[in-house]
Image 1 (cartoon, rainbow, N blue to C red):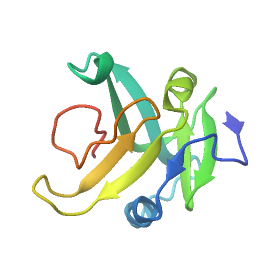
Image 2 (image 1 turned 135 degrees about the horizontal axis):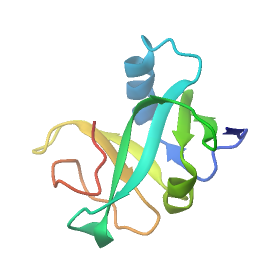
Image 3 (image 1 turned 60 degrees about the vertical axis):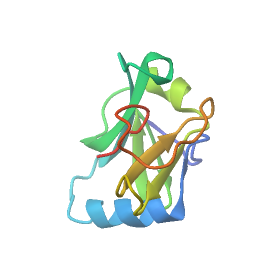
Length: 120
């Protein structure tokens, strides 16, 4: 596991940070945090999808903190997530949820489109 002291060009907005800290409050694992990943096979957004969930850090993972949230990224996803922003969209026609905006995509409003979202 590589522990970084800087966020590695991935940003968690203050609103997303507050939501994530609330979710993670009951998670007591010492190596646990918010895992971000990239998966292939999504039918849009260039054929990739983005995801996130609670997980433990493992060998080879990059770990850093942003907005008080411990973030874990596997080596294969790290280069594809550079410049990403994790946001929380509250309300609207599509509801509330987390959104992962990458540096190479145009940000979309809210989750629910079925791809490039990463809502959990």
